[in-house]
Length: 68
Image 1 (cartoon, rainbow, N blue to C red):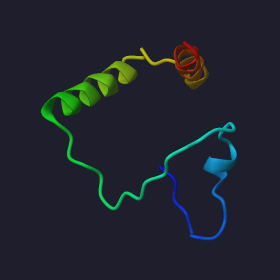
Image 2: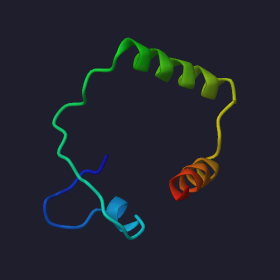
Image 3: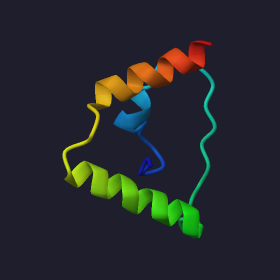
Image 4: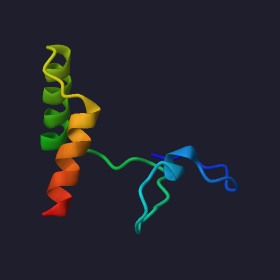
């Protein structure tokens, strides 16, 4: 999520690689389905148990899949 003052380019956007992006205004987050809610709770519990993955590793995995 990017918070924008309507004038200056946010730092979050400056850090993105060159490409095409879609930016959509969000006034309220959509409600989660029961499955989505359960998935988030499971993920939080996993992180609390020390089973997290470093952000750099996640970004590498995503980039690898996008290249396919």
